[in-house]
Length: 335
Image 1 (spheres, one colour):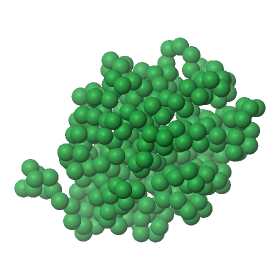
Image 2 (cartoon, helix red, strand yellow; image 1 turned 120 degrees about the horizontal axis):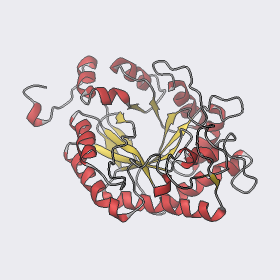
Image 3 (cartoon, helix red, strand yellow; image 1 turned 45 degrees about the vertical axis):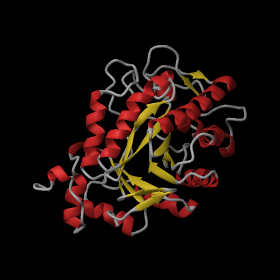
């Protein structure tokens, strides 16, 4: 199944291998603009045979960057470089998406940072300002404007970053959202910000729309997979096409990590909410990826660090699984 096509709305991926979004922290001039590094890094994985490449968390506001070295999509000045990036990837036979993000309280920047509530990530982190209703509206507008720029730049897929303790995840989590207004309290009120972000994006974007979630917060008072099934049902009702299922990073501490440790969460979201999912997290072996798909635990397999180590992982996977993978014409003599 790994090398069978998969459809997201009107888009058909040539296989089910997805490059997971991974921050490169490579914008050396702090402008948010695409650099030469990005133009080499992402098309290399397209040459290697990946079906869909998801560009790293890209900030919808300058204040929403994780670090000053992050990519940005908060200005029309960013569109030209992003358009060049999509052209290069398309030219090598892959599809490309972009992850729209806001770091919230996990931003490591000069100046004020914002979050649902004035709670720092840890005792070494800056205390964020609790967002006003006006700032919430402005941030929803920023996500909407970013989606419009992504469309202008030629991206095939958008992913909303609602995981890993960044801003949207901060609204969803009872650990980080202590608001007493319409954006905090029970699950429905905590979901309101994401609901409005989805609605805003859908007003300018009709292509495939994914959401990355943290399915477990590994804290006794945090969200569990049951909560994320509830949220995933809301996302499905809003027209989200696929949930990219990760976990953790809302608060400090690490879960026990082992090969495929997040795959059970993907399976739970997929069966519980009746929505397509992508599995991620220490998926390294072709047989492992194939089993995840064959057993119905996910619809797509996302690879992160393994594609940093080997841009041509799909080639090796095809050989191991006995699948046909066409070589780029210049590489046919050595493929």
